[in-house]
Length: 183
Image 1 (cartoon, rainbow, N blue to C red):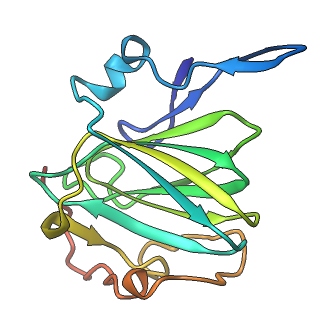
Image 2: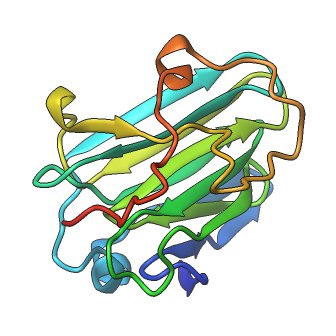
């Protein structure tokens, strides 16, 4: 496994080395020794799975507020997504910058999302499955989000948005005076 930092502070792409033969293939998706530096002492406490039926579906942008902030590792198990993180951290050198990467069952990439960054994705195919590893337990009172179509962010989804949950539609836009979240 290779950890390749991307241009959002603390975020990284995790490149998996798949080994195959006539039987099929094998890949290591998680190793605390290899990921120790980017996890910075955090442990994985929860693993979640999502399924989205239709291309164009948007989920997010989600995050948990301190003291329940979490790092996430997101991997696509089936289909293809445009996975996005948005830096909301007060004082971060990449504050309010976002990055999107394509994750698919074929490219063997995972995205490490630091604490204080919102996460969302758009499905680029039908029948998409994602696996999420979290460094904090889900805490409903810490749940927060940002509107997926906030004009302050100018997030460019690759497809027309076809599905968004009512919960995600209700996420607020960032206030003009938004100075970031503290961890």
